[in-house]
Length: 387
Figure 1 (cartoon, rainbow, N blue to C red):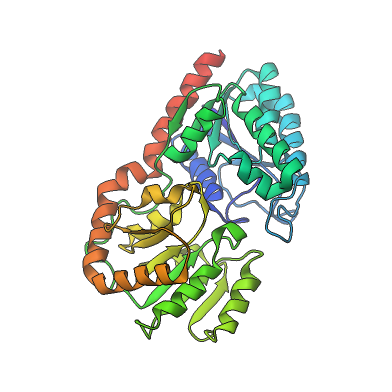
Figure 2: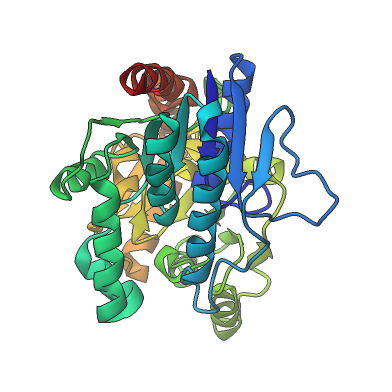
């Protein structure tokens, strides 16, 4: 089939769970014999290849800064991207059997929906997250938040085949008035199908990996490690990633005199991230908002347990088997997070082996291959419905 993927970012030019999902999806679809086009904003230098072999990558908008200094998404890039998607699909949409887009940043959904009447392709939409109205207002202010929530609701009411990556957001999508069916995909992992029989012996190392935006609360790791060091004196940490909160993290490290204990290397090579996770005592993901939490699965694939924090917008808790592959903290307080770090340290190899067993037991449903089966069926069903 001829598939058009639509997302304004492309891994590794930008780094995140959704970026990795669409790159993996594109590569797997090509490997399965499909013809794939990828619409995005340009994120590479002019004259250079976007670096996605055998995929027709089209930039439908210029290179732009997606984030404001605060870490919030800027409004202009989604508008320009949505207009570029509409323009491209209006001209070339008839060549595709299905258009598969992320719900966010929303205007691309509206653009694809507007062009569909002319082109007749099936529309598939991934809803990585569905934000409540209260969160929209916190994110954009009262007026902007109401408008954002209304645009999100409008996108849900476009006829579509929807995918979510958690039960949390699938439920919210129904409440929003979804016009179509929704399937929960539990698999985004594109690595080894089994954990090592004997996980690597853990170093006294706590790891965070992700974009440093306010919602990720990376600075909470600094205080948690400081508290845990009262019991584990040789405990260290690596806070991997970049973003507007990185300066805050560095300041907190300096305030507590932990420069030789906590490293903040920025974004590093993907293989190095995996090597760091493999030797870590645990992954600490204090985020308040996650649509999935892929890094939890990646940690478990090495036998490394995770700590996540309960919250109304955090779907990563769905990936934790309490006491099997980690723990769910009730709050982001340093004392509670430190207590869980110490508990993982005390359980040692037994918890790492349990985490490896948890991964092996769940590897099939967590793999991207399982999700691709459902996605391919949706393409076929949408093509038939559109014909």
